[in-house]
Length: 331
Image (cartoon, rainbow, N blue to C red; front, side):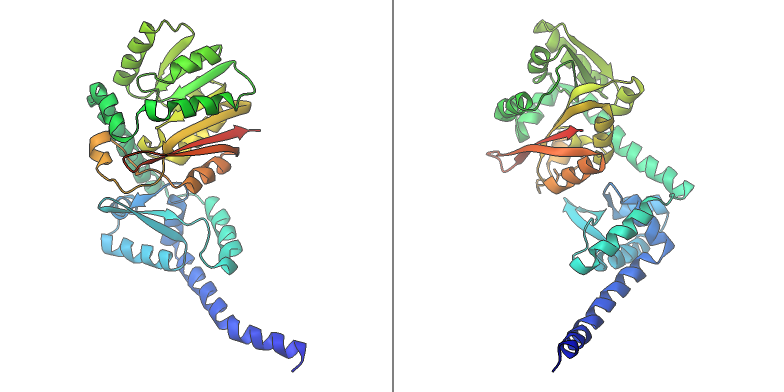
């Protein structure tokens, strides 16, 4: 048999499966509602009931659409407690379809979400953010106790400070987002000319300020608000710290993008957070919105924000949690 015949024979055997997979993907993405769902799932994960609220449709209908998207490899799911969250799948399981899927997502990302959908989506995100702020305002006196349930600063603080020292090009200004009781601030104040502590919980920020005052730190200022507040203040920092903050944030991708915008040229973002876990009791006990993150999720969000990955360190805690220390740089 000639070489051409062999090639034709191989093509005939594999083509039906490839064509079928392409057809499944195209059919899944060929529905206007499913395109909107993929747009909404671009940088965040939502549960079925949240998606029903966002798109104002019945749960049975939403589950049907998600099943089609999942079967086509366009979305992935993850169970957190009793809720299954759906997120857009960055890579199709079928390697032959990955280029096609990437092009599809790039086109969808340029689309505009319907105005009513965008409004309901914003409502969901505001509800998540409000729940987080309310928890910390209500439990400010229990912060250290709750922190000890997962990971105390004494368990990983030395590693954070060592990673800080290995990453700096400039030491003019540092910004810590969500400083807690200020455990990291003493080191930051000794390293940088000026330090800003930012928190969206007024009660937490007041507690932090009181504790910092006792330490005699005089090169620190406090800002009540979120990362958008910092952007509005036109803050530019050589170093930004997100220490155990992401899993309390309704839209992790957005806060990482904001951090990138707050960094100076060659500035460093240091993220300390939990790896993905299944201990759902932390949602009620500690106010967590997310059960940690897969390292690839954080890497993907950082790369989308234009940051370059640096050093990483992973620490296993005695209670089964794993902490990831991730360094990213703005070039």
